[in-house]
Image 1 (cartoon, rainbow over the protein chains, first blue to last red):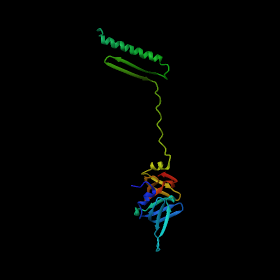
Image 2: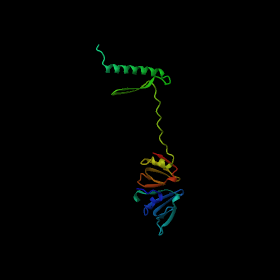
Image 3: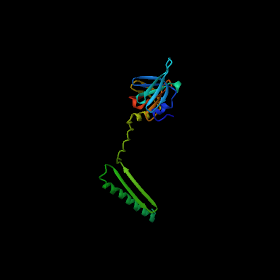
Image 4: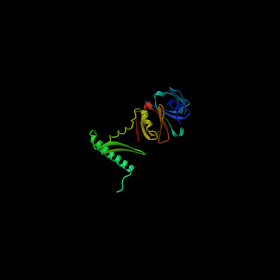
Length: 70
Length: 130
């Protein structure tokens, strides 16, 4: 049901909405890419360009997937 | 009274020996804690009689039951809480919900809203059962 590692589980959820929490804040958007060390979240903004945010996997405390996105 | 048959006489003799044996053993049993504790074995042709008497002597207390194993790692604690309502504290937030899975380096909690939260075990500071 769930992958053995955090990064592997995130990789199965690419394309879904995610909220990524670190010690210093939160990033929410579309989970776009996952490697064993890095997570790419595209923040959806009202402007023309979406902002890419790279988050170190080691820095992530937890990731929340809202019910509608699961 | 009719005379005893050979078989009855033999049985009576053995019964007499058995009672003597009991008395002798009781007298020699000075090292026991209290009461009588002796084993008597009589072998009759066609009849095996094995008597183990334990009269009034205290048996050694059975070993106390081993205490339940206490978890030694955060992961073991989490494994014991699967399917329970938990409160998990991380450096920034507290997550409350039902713990549904524990994997190598993360756990999965379902919040009341239905959201799934993947929490890295390394980042967990506190966990408690609700």
